Length: 252
Image (tube, rainbow, N blue to C red; front, side, top):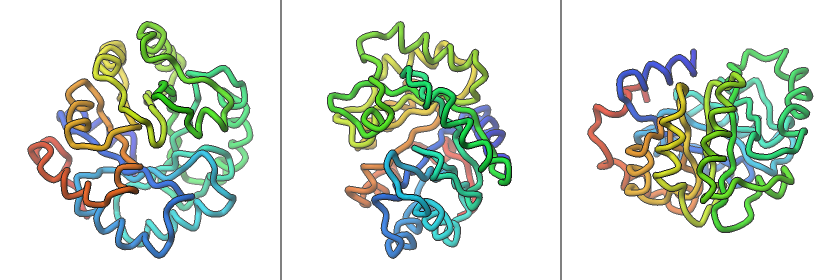
């Protein structure tokens, strides 16, 4: 499976993509079957797995269980090297370009190579920008970096473009898990206008109106995690979101 090429193909057809983010620290193995059943029946097109603070081995156990119940691509969204497992299909090779901590710009990546070398994971270089959302996030705490200010649009846009010019294949605008509010449409619009690569937007999206707003502003992939964790009925709410033709047809 070529995850990145499939993303490009979907975007070229005007299709919108939705990734469900599952945090290994919050999802119990006994709940996976029921949760993934809802994912399979939804408009979701990818499953992202990862968190900022996860114990060693937990991610692999979760990924193995998820793979038993779905044919959707399972992509690692790791907060640390210990979350890498060859049981997944791919990995977002994240560079926290909104911060200036060398560990998250290159240090962790060097550590990861010895683990990635022995896997068949599809590695997708991803420029990751943390945008302030009104409270401290776990990403901010763990990475010891500060998010970009929402009102500093030029810095956000220039940082995203720099990420593309550095060779990243995706740009990810993140408000953080449990964000008090989603990233504004103006930010998404201006960043998208500068990019020639796909744009991912996540954090703080808890309604179909906010999801639709992110798509209309230019997000190619929207990531939702907390909203599904708190209320699985959100799956049902999204069924009437957009005409089915705007989402890729895929095997469940």
